[in-house]
Image 1: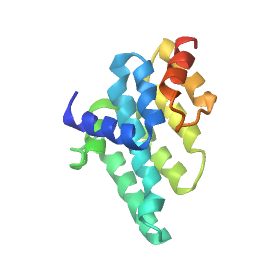
Image 2: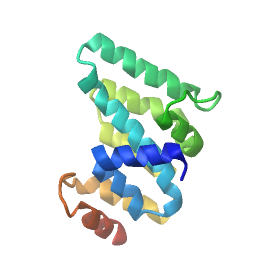
Image 3: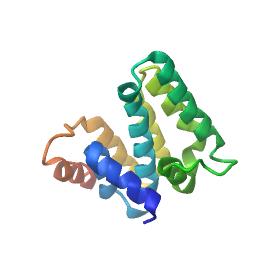
Length: 155
């Protein structure tokens, strides 16, 4: 793995374990793209916690929106999440701003994230992603990795 994906995986492992585990139960080749996507989601989810004023939140959301719009055509800014997205998640470039919009408007973040995840995986992993997203598991559950594996195994 490259250092940007290592960063993404470690951020998820520490702050969003549920999403860290999801790619582990899927085909190995999809891990980098999903970890990049889920870390991008984590960055967006942090915004209301680090910028409490609506004006500052809007600036941060716009920064991310501008950054992802540039990914297909320009060098990504020196941020490990953007570098990872550019390298591994090309199938969803056009839709990443939908995730920013969902976070900013407090809309259906899970629905957008599921749709983006489905674009990144193929074949048998489609069923697994759908089943995992619909399972509504508790991220603090110590048996979560085993439950996700079970869900994915019998999708």
